[in-house]
Amino acid sequence: MSATAPQVGSQLADEYEAMLQQYFEGLGEAALEYAYELGRQALADGLGVLDMARLHHAALLKVSPSRSPRDEALRSAETLLIESLTPFEMTHRGFRESYAALQTSEGRYRELFEKAHDQHEAVTRRIAHALHDEAGQMLASVYLAVADIARELPDAGRQPLEKVSELLDHVTGQLRHLSHELRPVLLDDLGLVPALEFLAQGIARRSGLVISVESSIHDRLPVKIETALYRILQEALINVSKHAHATRACITLERSSHAVCSSIRDDGIGFDLTDDIWPPASGGLGLIGMRERLMAMGGMLSITSHSDDQGARKGTTIEIIIPLPAVPAGEQDS
Amino acid sequence: MTHEIHLRIDSDFDIIVARQKGRQMANELGFGPTDSTLIATAISELARNMVAYAHRGEIVLQSIDHGDPPGILVTAFDKGPGIPDVVQALLDGYSTSGSLGLGLPGVKRLMDEFEISSEIGQGTIVTARKWKRRAA
Figure 1 (cartoon, rainbow over the protein chains, first blue to last red):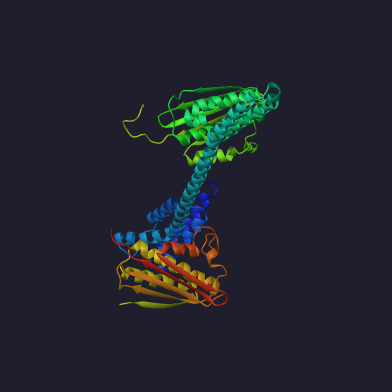
Figure 2 (figure 1 turned 120 degrees about the horizontal axis):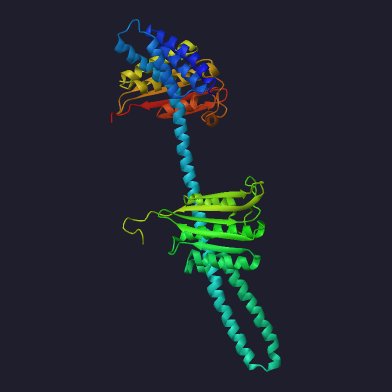
């Protein structure tokens, strides 16, 4: 581009100069039409507005007005310049229009995404709490009733009831697990860090992965942020335990005055970042969903695949940054 | 008083005349040099389309000076082949002007109001208005 631009420019410069000369000699509207055509040509050749200004100025310095007094000549030359810039103006207005339309559609998309997500989260929370509290209580009553019946029976008759009790234990465990998968009550009651620690214990127990959670956050974060971080880290941890062949994973959480930063690093096989091999964990967001979720909150997500000197993959780090809502002055450092 | 100019368009020379008349009318109505140029350009694009596709047509320039602010109305009509898909024609990237947003979409952007109707085999009518900007 830079190799050909001066040539195109110089040819245009000659034409522009000749045109200006003719304009000063009284060609009038035809010269203006010519200026417009030249502008179109320049635009098609990839020249910018600044190039046109330069062309015009250079031509003005070379061409001396033969008829008109200087001031008048300069004034009329302005008309010629404006004429040659009009194609750029048209294009520019088109870009502005497209940009505004893009902004509007982007805004609407984010809004819809947020709304759908909030609704999903609210429903999930309701179901999870109903499972945990109501279904749990009902099961407890069944337990007591079974125990009452067992007490009245002779020893020999108790055996089948013990089997029922065992099954009830099973159901209770399943319900608790399901409720927790949907929305950990811990997250609502105690906050992000305890919920993550609990999650890590569960996954560590099931997979044998050694997971550490290091956090310097001691107070609660806005619910939306806690939820988003929990969901993303949950998804990431499940992925590490299933696909990374890792032995260790480390989660960090930090809070600055404006943002929450979190990372999760593992020592697994990593993955090729060009592949989209991170499928959504059952019912999860998937990598794309996480990105969208974060972007909707003004945050970002980066994935780094580490490799050693021989190019062998050595684990993966995911970093997440979510900006905190602005805190009114005077309430900081709370 | 409403001033009206009828212009026959069937050559490149007519395009230049139409531009000039449009610029003149805009100047008389008190449009600044920049807006006068934009009006001349819009007329230029309409006339150019006419010569290119319909070979001939007519452009009517009317001053709208009974209202406040004053404005200019440009009507371009031809009995040419018509435009098969008007919506498409108003999208950038259509027609000979390439994807630079010139041509009909360009006219639409330069003027304040723009209407077009076209029928295959019958011709095309474009009306476009531009109002004088009030001094800030």
